[in-house]
Length: 441
Image (cartoon, rainbow, N blue to C red; front, side):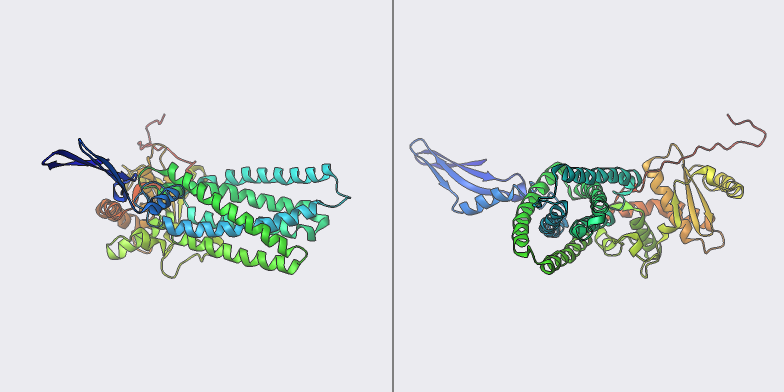
């Protein structure tokens, strides 16, 4: 509450204004209290509908909205809700087909048979989720956009398997288990990327609030989708062509909505591709691109659908191997590292090796997050200079003169320069410079 005093010939009159809102930029006056020794009155705001509407809205958007979230939050949530709506409608169609294939409603079907089939379907999905986490868990946050699309693509494939399961009664178990494995990939990838995106949206350390409100939005989309799904399933029962037309149409819309949702994201964290785009542009122009500009240039489709070399940006990061295992190197490569370590990387927490245009990074076991980022930027510069006569000399000269300025400009443009988003580095090394005749412990 905020109040003020006004003098009166008959005494003192106090005016107290009542305000509602959790953020200073979104406060609304709801009432004015006038009090004196002889009178007392309350004048409430005439816009009660607006007050009620704001109360309802608080259940679905984070407190302090829109200043508490990034500018791309609204566009992403709109497209994400639309794709979720189409998913729940299709879920009713695929579940109906799956239950029909199991034998629901048929006299010949047994309870134990249906239970076993459902159990086997869930079991394969659980195992698939564990295997997917083992192989790809560490790279999900570094490529959140791509894995977000992959997650929904795998979900589409899983529902397609359920829908076609009645067409292959002899291979029913195989088909539904394949669909369950596909959906398990969706659960892991979608959950991990959602956590990364929530951290991106949170501008006021309000990730928990954003996650809770996202749950409310999804609940509404689920209820509406289920209601529409039951309606569609009721009117398409017995009409296979209508079922397939609705399912495929909604699938196409689902893929489009997901693409639009991911495309509008402007992540300000540094991963391998964004670092490559930023560095090459800086080396050519001396300027740093904004997160919004880079978001329009980076690939968001799965790697196997994207060209290896973009027409606009040479993907230098595809020439870099981070965290190379020392024991996998040949004798000549080790000798090259020995020669360069004493001259170029004596004070660095990493070593670089260039072989046929491929840059291998050996990371020191005591390297920090900033050291890893520096090693990767250095490797990109070395890859950029491989066509020169002395790439190691040229890249080291650039790092000495331009690296700190590059990082400073990145920070001033809104980029997070504390770490590089990359798969976990499990192979590191420790090296000691010593004369040949000295013994190394």
